[in-house]
Image 1 (cartoon, one colour):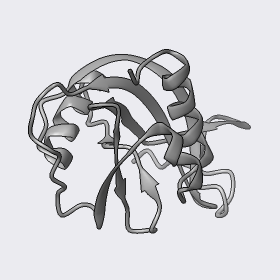
Image 2: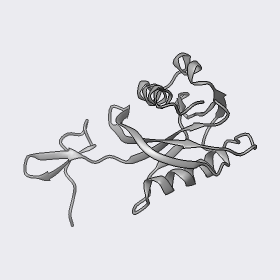
Image 3: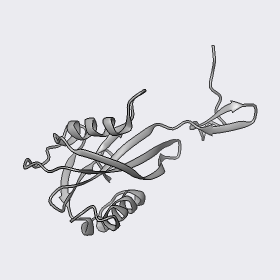
Length: 153
């Protein structure tokens, strides 16, 4: 039986690969900055933070395909997923970290978004309204970079 050894109980995300060598063992989350009519859909999670639509990458799943699936599940939209452009490690709790890969995406349909049971609430905001919201700073940075790239026109 091959047991994984962590560096300490406080750091279960650091796994020993070779004697004395530790590396991150992180779930991967793919998220989308979606432009729809100059607005951005955000979802309120169980920690009462606003977040971008998306979710965890399944084993052997292509990140863009995963993100398109997650957008369909969370917003009922068939969005177009473009390139990834922003990545970061998010510390959800001291013992829980996630690698987040953010993509640009668009939705050109007429149907407003609907949200799933996974979230408490959905809002459509302009990028300029994001600064006042309770959300991780790196989500705000990803949105700012999307604006700089001309994603919201």
